[in-house]
Length: 448
Image (cartoon, rainbow, N blue to C red; front, side):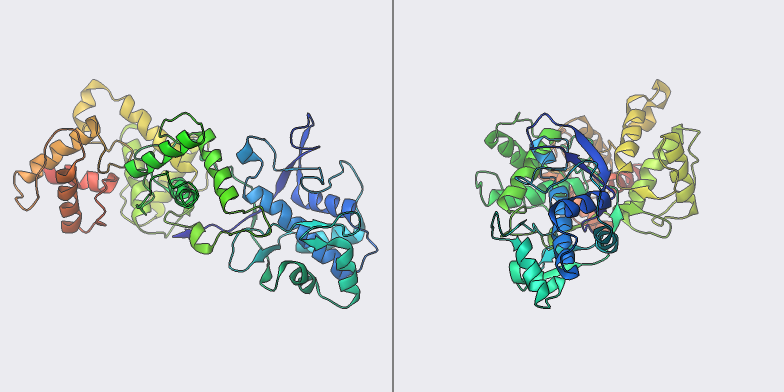
């Protein structure tokens, strides 16, 4: 399990004007952006606690925009605008105040949260004189500071007693939400879990979307049907495949129905950002994800002399580090020996390329290779038929297996046989065929 908390970005891309204006985008360090906005909107002579409270608001507001990909989910290529009508006042090339710079450097990796929500709170605010709003009053915060209120007390006065500060958040490069690869039947991982989570919540507002009951993070027929209905409702090409356009439309509707960019947000809880798959695997890690890496690396190494074929098991050992480094060097990735979640697409594409380019002399071996996606009930095709042929050979000597029809359809009988094999050999009983079960079935099919 991995929990994804918000990351304070290294940089932020600002559109120099309202969203639809024909203005430039500039990318600046996040701390420079916060100091610029604070120097544009606040007076350096204000009491220190008022400045701190307001800078917390500026940080949290900007992080809310980035975390929710508010503008990117609408098709824009920036994180925030410089327009106070929509966001915060940013003035290109302006000088900033020394005391404000100092505060920003001290607190830039802290942000406001509300209750048990995870996302940076949408800290709406206004000046309190020319304009008023439901959020923080900048001039009002000065009065509260003069009364001896702390920054947190000022924030609670405007946003409620359940406001708190998330201190010392991790700082890193922001990664675009879309994984870069279209997602369809058989795909598995955290992106699928995100799609399923979002669609299940969207369904509360759009009940025509079929329910998704799976919790495995595998893109199955249920998920495909829900995606198709979503695409139909929101006038997207009805393909059942999540491309970049569908991904960001799901993201936008999810943010909207949960009001994540609103003072009165439904919010995202820790359970909403807890995923089955680790974002990175390294020396000493154990478990099924490590075994998955080993399966694909071993297949690559079988044909690629640049990747050493070394003994592996379910532990991320020095052998794994060596193979991962060779893979990373071969495919021009940072050579760290640590396998990142973003490496999966490249690894699977390399594996897919092998499947498509086998020589005729190796046809016997290729028939035994996993097709690079999860097989589950309702799926059809030649890969299902390949699997059923192996399964039939097992059924011929193991009469405890319910049986199989070699018809290329992952039907009830195939699923019952898969479940029995999973029970017999210690796999999770989910009825889904992944690379490890596939390998086991191929192995068992060769027994006399």
